Length: 502
Image 1: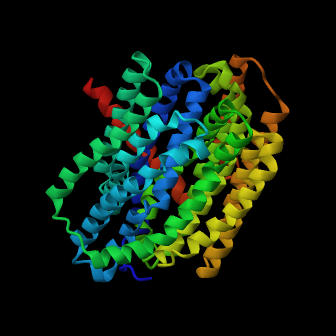
Image 2 (image 1 turned 90 degrees about the vertical axis):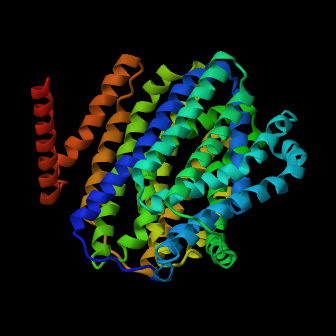
């Protein structure tokens, strides 16, 4: 490994840092999802299913074009930042990542501009897309730049600043959509412009903050090195985009735009599994170089892997149990057809999260080329499944293809990372997580409930069985029990202090 070895510190401090980082990074992600659910109650009543499908395709086209045109360039920041020979040149590393991202974003917008007509005809099959695509291309530099700036905050572990910047972004979107779509009913144009403008505003704020901390410069020789490092990751992201969202384009070819909108809603709810894992990944992907450089790095990795599986399993289970009553309350009845798809998508993204956690080992070892081998293999299988299943069973074909693909990629991730550098996992504890989850799902599907009130009560009871089952199986280690008792005592003292102050 070419990154710097980290002086020894207690293993407890590493877990504490991971927990703190995950907790802080979760704040904007959770609030973003809560805000999106709140906005769904507005947008699904104002936008038609065709509008919803148009917005979903605009988001996906923007994402895939960014990936194709080097939008992953800033992902090289962490590797070069922690390299031994770059310790005295970190201002140069950060500046090259940030300014390079803005330049690549500007180039991407210019390259895409002449292709608007082709995209409207081939992808959207709707001339109305020509009204919206220019906005997407104009704001591309800010999309590239804000990701580089947020990446710098994560690498330097400036968690509080990252949270504030992310919350500003969410607040701007909620305010803009709430006023322009909810009150003024401007619909697609307002929704799109608001989400893109938020990236530009946050970019401006973070650039000011960056200049107050250091003087970022750009090195074109370093730019070339970072570009080469990021290329395999860009190829990997192309494959991941096809896996994540290609089903919507294939579905649009065979089915109506309205069905794409319903499927997109179910997909977005199922993808909520990525929110808590995304919080952990924000910390892990930026600090993996430092953690695996420790003498006890593999021991720390083993425990963090168990926590990752526990986290994504818990959320996937909650989404599976709560999707029916949740959507019946939050969205219009025309979108309830998305409910049965959510458990499949949630399970798929739980598996995907575990694979992503493992594949960070490729980056820490300086082997980014291993990542696209895994993802492109998955993409090939996924595309084949799309064209086999979607024409026959529509939305269900897309969901099943996604689940099968992430299962395949999960297996490849385990095998490839282990061959690169063998590691241990806590097998018995992982079996306990799987066993309790399986028992709850069997109960859930064996006893269907139709009443909304009974659904809420039944799902709440089953969710409570998950921690109870793990407790009965003695899942927690003595050290974890001691940490829980200590946390409970601190909370108790805090509550007592608040009561006395009152």
